[in-house]
Length: 586
Image 1 (cartoon, rainbow, N blue to C red):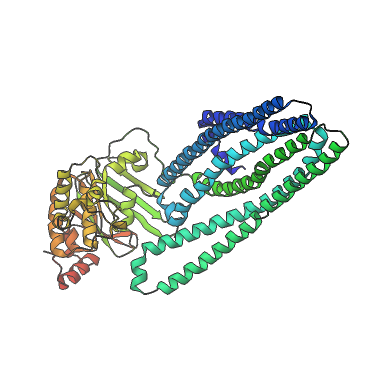
Image 2 (image 1 turned 90 degrees about the vertical axis):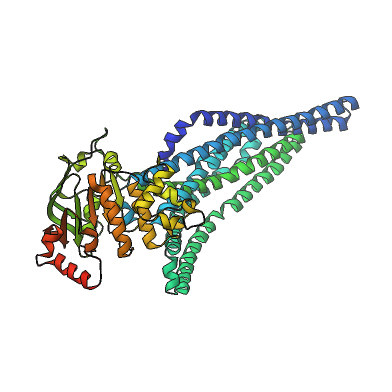
């Protein structure tokens, strides 16, 4: 139960609702318990009527009175039970809402390394399936537990008052039931954990399959994909059945033990009636109703125990992520100015997940308002520099400063608000084109959106769609071509009007003519902004104030376009190669 202690703060938050729910539960149980007492009275009245001890008028009056009490108490009990469910079940929905928000907020706070180490399907399963299982604990399980405890205490008190000896015989099976529940609960907890792990595997596999469906179809590997899914689903099914086999023991054992209690009531009660130890058959009828009233609450003990065990397993999985500390922490509470020279001084960086050293003792300066281009082979560390400027990772050695302030001493929100970032893999959301562009500036007007689209040279493509800017894109922007997605991403960065622009090979999917037009617009936009362009094309970087060439994480060349084409090295070789291939380099 240690994992579930995390929920105590929510119980405290909604304590008023819970207290009201408990009070309503107790009152509802008291009213429902009038039924067996008046059933007993009916037996007594009938016995007196048969013996001629009371007149017919009295017999009818007392009989009608008892029936009316049963009906009224049942109606009041049912009415209060309705409000009990509304109160406690609503609390479970409130807690589910709060817990999902807490998990989602934690997901957003965690660093990129976390997402490299964990699969999307598993993250989705924890915030959906696991949270749903926890909700069953804070809702139905809690409600039935309160109901069971309340009913059990009140019923036992009534039974003892009616016949202590008969009560003792009736509750004999209950200790046996407790031992069985304890043994089965431990096994349920173990198997529930395994089941949740396999559900995460299934979610992960299906999510990856649907995301990569174009590749699967292109390579015609649907049969292999189906086979792998079938194998995984079969394993998951076997784990579910294994759990169900254990859970299936609960209700048969409950019914057996409750049935045994009924037989004991009839047999022992019958003997007591014959021996004159109890005065009326109504007492036996009353006890049988009591025992059957306990049937469902006692039966739910097993069900509730199963829910609690599954909830604990799920909450334990949730806690694993909630307890993680973000690697990138905002160390400054107040907003900070992010505008000025960007200086890398002997910066080295190694990726934790692969242990690959991406940067080795690199040093350079980007002046405020300057455009700097970075070239290099694949894996040379170009994108890593942009990630470090955005502080998506923290450096391992050296220093990065902006306007003379170490980057980790800048307010993280201020830093990222000052940056317009266009990643290499343009990511668009399943929303309208307009909203995807406005993602960079939620307060932007329609005119701002159109202006940014024109500057990114994508306006003409957008207006050709039937719904124009209101066209809803498919998942990850699949509706658009690669070049269109890149240009929408550029528009998203432009509309933000940031002080720092970072372009990570964002023109790789467009033709050279379109590239020229976009670069011309970008030159005008970035005239007073600090701009860093990562590219494989000389045509994209030739107009930069400074060009940095990386190789294996180190700077091997640095200078302007004119300077570098007159030196032997990677840049000149790339220039001549692309010139011979017909690239527009002039």
